[in-house]
Length: 264
Image (cartoon, rainbow, N blue to C red; front, side, top):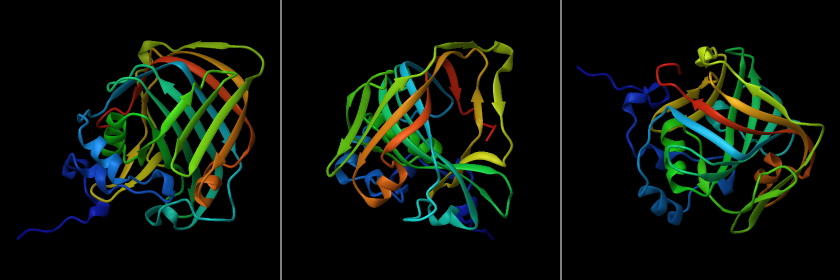
């Protein structure tokens, strides 16, 4: 006698290399088109962990939560949640297991009445690399979709992602001065508890979580910044990336380890 395992609790070993195709998003611009699927299918499968370098800059900014308008959490996560801040990221990774690529991401943070803790979910993550789109979906359930990029995320410059009928531009102005950081190697990987993690529903694999980073050996320079965001597109995209000027942080870094298997 065999017992079927519901998808909601399926373990990572039950995912196959086509799991990426079933991942969707509440934001129309983050959903795959047929053309994107054809490009992504050709990419290699590169499981975690990943080592990342961003010599051209990683820009983070914080936005107030949207208390009205469209719901940006998928139904698997919506429940009784208390929204906290929303975040945006714009970066060019100059060294990864699948090569260099650009990325702009929107992230929601929230707490729950049940299973108390702080959680994060990314409904919008656009890149210009089919290889990272495939592996970001398979490894972590991120709804990575493809976009055209112009510019750079360097401080004082502008990075723009666009597709049919939509566009997101992110520019920055520096504040104060660089703060260099180098962390000792003995720190290794840092694992946060289950109550502090990313949550990305994957129909083929259940809700994927990621809460481990290798900070040991990380070398970075950080600078406070003001970030200007301009977006055009669906109501959902404009809710995730609202026009405005926000406090942020600009950084370049080397030796960031992302997601150690067995720690999530």
